[in-house]
Image (cartoon, rainbow, N blue to C red):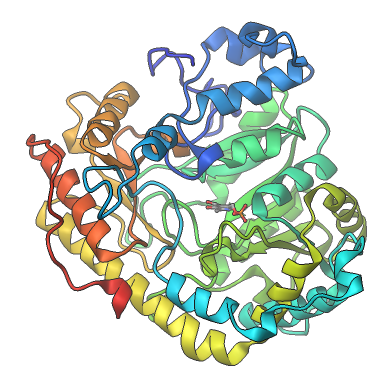
Length: 498
Ligand SMILES: Cc1ncc(COP(=O)(O)O)c(C=O)c1O
């Protein structure tokens, strides 16, 4: 694993505006491939790119191609937090001093509801067509169900069409497939930072596609602005910056609700971003993987598919999956909705490698069709549990006098721990992260999301109360300089049991 001083390992800030092209980044605490990374030095970063045999610098295997070595490098360098967590996972009975994971964005509050529903007899169907090679776009019965599901939950003005739906095994694969079919090797997507850092790998590992950052900051500039607000002006600056570096930008990636901020774009903002993309003939990849995890009723969510008119429908591609909204990241179900037939067909062709088994497709269709269960049981209960867990962590943070972004969507809170860094550097941020890990709580630090201000952390709250409670107690110990592993979780009424 590479260990370099954090300042040296920063992304090359290549653009005079607010963008820089992507480096070998990943996040610490957001799933296996999204975990800890160390970065190679500036020289290597400059060499990183189209057809570059960067892997020869990482050549610890004579068995692998240069591509294979780069891919292995990502794996080797991206795991520290997650690996440490898995070697010492908290278990109430068997390992009460183990690590509490407030780093991985998963919803662990509804296993009871899901296991009851998925165990019902209507879920198991074995018939020849489900055991044979499928239509690579996904079985028609499932694409029809997904089209109905998205029409309803995205509030589309007209029914969405099954022929625009492609089914595959999750949004990670979909990022990878879209990058490959939309970009040439070495081209880039714009992405506002902080962002879910694993997208770096998703678009690079197969597609050799890079990211051009639109750096956002926490400064509030006026009564109508919010921290880390994305504006068209910032998009324009980042695009010009990337172009002046000779980077060809092919598209814009937007996450709504946003990870890690929890922000939701208003219909007006969405429209502006889409118009910007149209002006520059950019594709827009809309990641709406948290669209049903908006748990505050007062927060109005607007899917891009609800807009009366998409400015550039042929270049607008929407993704959704069950990993977050249905708390099933292990099941691996994702879907693309695009009116562009060429894009749908090219992605479908890659589904030969990213498809879902017929039996799982059947289960998914049954689940998505069961509106009574979704609307009357699952969503209200899931939202109530998310709200309770969010309230608990927010109150803990308030009691500690720690600023954070109060949002009503997603599984995480974006927390400002800048005052705990003796110096405002990413090295200090990493040291603080390590102190948390040493005190047996895994968090995600801001650099993993390419946040440009050191000291921001993402706290995942979508877990059972006893684990949250113990996790927050350990956070408190670190911040108060009293780190030690707590033996007994304090009691708290379990938001997961509501
Ligand atoms: C914004 C965002 N998009 C996509 C994914 C990956 O989704 P999937 O599990 O469907 O691959 C994640 C996972 O953390 C995410 O946060």
